Length: 247
Image 1 (cartoon, one colour):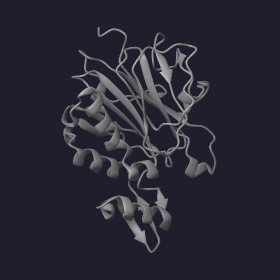
Image 2 (cartoon, rainbow, N blue to C red):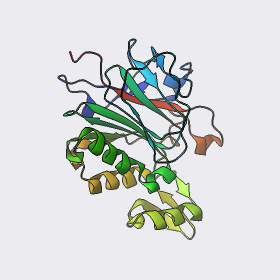
Image 3 (cartoon, rainbow, N blue to C red):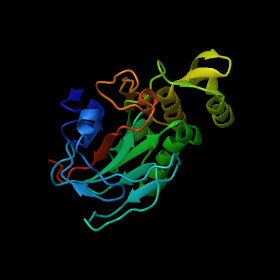
């Protein structure tokens, strides 16, 4: 559901183990002034006492694991496209403007992840690789995970060219399942469908995978869009974290 300037989903909102999370809009992003690699308190939607961290994104498949409390003096100078934490009071966040934000939560082992998946990262498997990291590091079984795929460029508008299609052919065995309206060297790519198929193949329970079916290119009133605007005028912030109190 849309709540003021952020979007929340029922998958993370049961009353017993409420998880702080949001998919941001362009309105929410205005004035946030998050600095890459520098934790910040008091971010709208995160809770005044929580620290929010976003880092430089490089369209790769590496994940940063935050396994301790954050401090104002902390600096994270590398580049990652997934952030993982089991620390209460830490919100891990990604920035998007057409790429797919993916939020994950394991209610058994109490760990969360935020993933930035553009077409390169998606084809390279950043989402299943993050699930594999959660399993190896924290014991999270894919079928227990709750996963939500956020607003991104939709298949309605996301037309791609031959270099992207060639990358799909080389990296995705059933790549034709996620393209539509193919005309020669161009087609429309369904990034959300690609990610849903990847998590299903990795063992996630389909009933625990939800999708926010909003296209960032279509909805100029809600979202920034690199494809629509031709440049980066801003990015949405999507984040998830364990609350300081379970109450």
